[in-house]
Length: 277
Ligand SMILES: O=C(O)CCC(=O)C(=O)O
Ligand SMILES: [Fe+2]
Image (cartoon, rainbow, N blue to C red):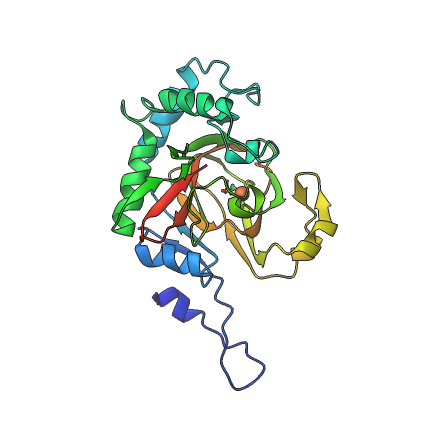
């Protein structure tokens, strides 16, 4: 157990058997395998990695995004550009199928992304660091034998409503193999001076929560009293948390745009990290 977690260890048990909430938002300078495992096991709310990349690398990617002819890879692209580069499996949940469009958008996005960081792919940079932390393979999840897309670049223009991400529940059968955990990874390439925080609640979806539906998300009142891990993004930082916990992204305030490169991480039965977006 890390020192910080031990430091906040508080027995909240109502009988003689100790029980700990364990939902800290840890702030570290290096991601480790233990961080990923603790988030996956649910004994850590979030890990915020300071200086995951240099600001120069963020600026390089941002400059590339500014000058790239981004084309018509997705109708969700709005002005200003870079609302989203790359498909999210989520976009295809309603169709119950990753159709040809998914693979087409994936190929285009991969091509656009491939030259964005010092002539290389920023996803490779992120994979190298996550692989080093994990000490094992980081490989794409597969859907009907094909490598899924991972590494969406997206701008949160207005934040995101309270939601959870659990692909095996929302899109059963899409992954060829069921991972044992669901962690989201976000590398913040650009971030506002204020606003744009991510709140992660210690609360997983339950069927009765559908009574709190609000469009694609949920109203926040029913999680308001849960322990919460808060991430305040800074450019160059990264963060992980269990994507099955309800989370909300606040509207970005003053300063730079809120742009991240992100993917989900699952741990499979062979001890590999598998990725998708
Ligand atoms: O941008 C963020 O901080 C979180 C976005 C999100 O909803 C996710 O990664 O699942
Ligand atoms: Fe999410």
